[in-house]
Amino acid sequence: MTAELAARFESLSFTPTQWRVMASLWNDDGQTQKEISQKTAIDPATLTVMLKRMEERGLVTRRRDPANNRLQRVYLVDARPAEIQRVRETISAHIAAVNAVATEGFDDSERAVLIRLLTRARTNLEPSAEHPQSHNEPKGDIA
Image (cartoon, rainbow, N blue to C red; front, side):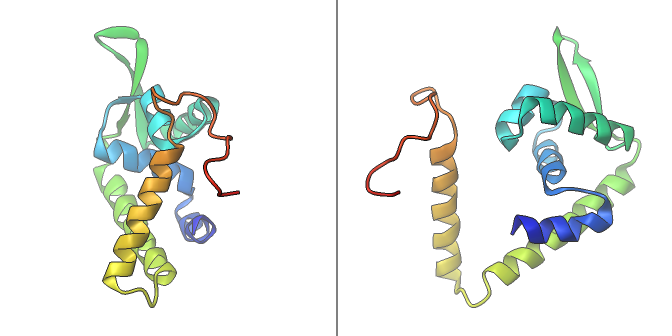
């Protein structure tokens, strides 16, 4: 699915990874780079380079947090709302199309089960306070 999205996003000069950053900001604008990194599972060094490119393109801006000067917060650029809205709508349409192809022939209950299981799998892979170590250890009988 990621490869299909990458091919579709190419016409927008966008990558699926950049989309994850944009989606995170659409849901919660003004996050720190650390928060974005954690929510999107993008390596902090990679994210820094990506944000620089996105800033040069006029999609995001980074500003110091007024309450804590050590933190930088990332915001969607308000100066180009039409461009941001166009990208958002186009990306959403591509995602919907890829999801439709990937789940062709599934009924509503099968789609719901798939989403539930994938969400649970993603949650299992997220670091937590209870299990901060690597997730490389096998669980149960799954190899």
